[in-house]
Length: 61
Image (cartoon, rainbow, N blue to C red; front, side, top):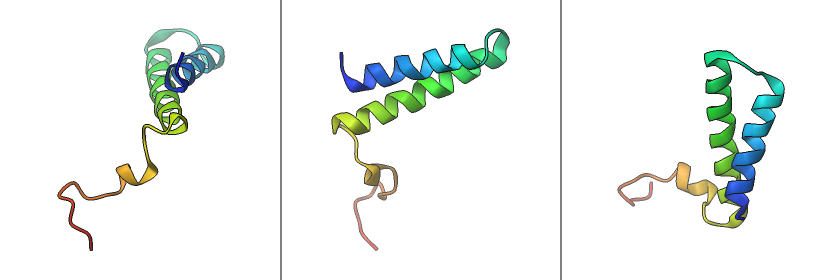
């Protein structure tokens, strides 16, 4: 199991443990799952922090 999947499962588990029930819980699970997934991808080395801040056209300032 990759670190991304592990991070996503951990985020979802924490969301269920912290708040259970209703639409708010759904949003919390989705948000923490996404954060865990991104953190796992970062730890796997598939994602670099600079990918979020680099311009899309490839030109530097």
